[in-house]
Image 1 (spheres, rainbow, N blue to C red):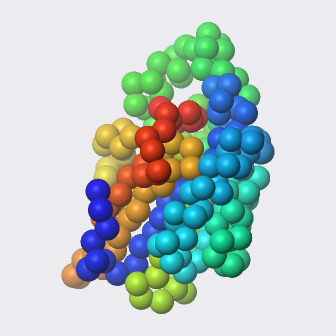
Image 2 (cartoon, rainbow, N blue to C red; image 1 turned 120 degrees about the horizontal axis):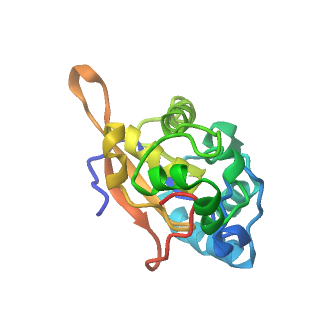
Length: 221
């Protein structure tokens, strides 16, 4: 999907680059796993593309994989990076650090519900609606002081990014599964439209964009 020049403010939801746990198929959650060599290259390459959108501000999850991704764009644009822990990935409790095969063996009921599109807590962690609420609040707080037609880049994670997008465009939770996941270092663009008495609304004008299609290696489905 393409950008619409009539849009006002924009939000670019950008997922961090690859980590070794992504590559190994391990659930990361809020474990502070750093970018691997591929992820560092992905962030540098994507930053060159995103810089062409002339971002106004950058806000990022404070986890190192997101922060390093955001700093790649900061290096190109000379913008500061504001850190906000509300953009962290879903806390997954006992799932964190385990592979999908291990989770399916140890927690078969939870794994089956997750694979079916459920939003329930995994491993005693967060409900996905809680993740969406905090991520949306972080983005709206970062956007509030920016001028009209500003572009905010929000650097986050696969699961958090997907539910952030879904809630921003007004999808009810039971329909969140219609959105595909974000691949490493790919992004989606939300564009503001007038909403009359209800205030502004947000439209998904680009989803899971990058230089080339990438596999989705993520805590998200």
